[in-house]
Image (cartoon, rainbow over the protein chains, first blue to last red):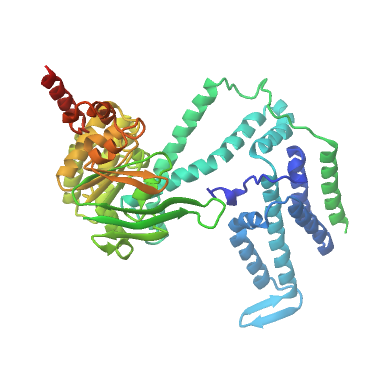
Length: 263
Length: 275
């Protein structure tokens, strides 16, 4: 039941952020993400970081959810930090231990990069935690719809995203079932080196893949039998509405980023 | 082999908002050479219970004893060979290019030599009436054939206890009959079978004993006659018992038949006696 939590799941609590239009949230997330990488002064970075942290607080989503979403990138962050700290030889030497040297510049850059990644992931998690998957997909569809003139399949893409999100927990559950069935037949997934372990996964991956294709077929049939013919002329049950507060939110996000760059 | 549950409890996701108490103190034994039917509604804990038989799930309270020894002290691989567990819709776990290889997976994992593996595979497929499918791809079979092959994949380990979780769900009547015949034959041939099902007619046909689970507790356990005639209501007894029970008051000589053939014979006897 906790499946998919780490992949950034919707967390339905009422907060001003949950109320915002999905399109505004997607754009604001993009602006903040770009801002995170454009800013190179410490004060500007702190401004954006403070903005993101206050958004996290305002979302009323428990901090544990964000910590969970940071788990998958923990290794990358740790490696980035270590590389910068130990291999960059800028600035004054802070510490010397055998061949290892820690320089001021390296420490600074390492922390900077690591917090950049952490903030980036938190921002993305903020978007998925405060926006229902359906709204998210609708928002993406709307934002991409101008591209439809260039024959870009915006609706199809959004539908694919919705379906993919919907089936993450289902496939996870299926994988667990198959794993248990194979364990009952003597499969051992924890034994041997990496190659042997990868090979031991075959009895799970093969049926899982086949099952996924079967599900896809069934879903396509179910959708067609209910009259689905793609995006053309399709109306929505829940219309997205872009209101003044959404424009305001976007403006604030842009201001924070511009401010961060100027500082 | 005898598997005994002593006050087994199981809580899923303890300490989280998703906490579910699936088993609330189950004491029960699977005797050697018996067919034990486990019945109960959805969410009564049947599937959780059977996964404790080979410790795919570990009890969060109580003990599982195998021939008097705490199962936790036994080697898992050995335990899983001796207790063969067939999950619901086992065909979802077929994976090899041919039926033969799929069924051979478990015996090979047990380290048997190749001749023995081949012999096991052939015998098991033969027993399940799927001998002719050996070289086919498991993905190109019909639903009933897939089910036979998937069950063979566990039975090929020659387990001492075979656990079947809803083995006949969604099957055609012919395959279902065959399968119940196999269950009966295994029970007579020295393998214990634990049959989990919510189809009471199915359980009535093959079980030596029946255990009724309700909300994670054993509500009743005993011979099919005892259990089913104690509650001959529609939702708690097989068709045969529901037909006979109302007649019993007036014609006690009809006895307490449970299986279809027995019931038919009893009714015939009753009619002939009146003529």
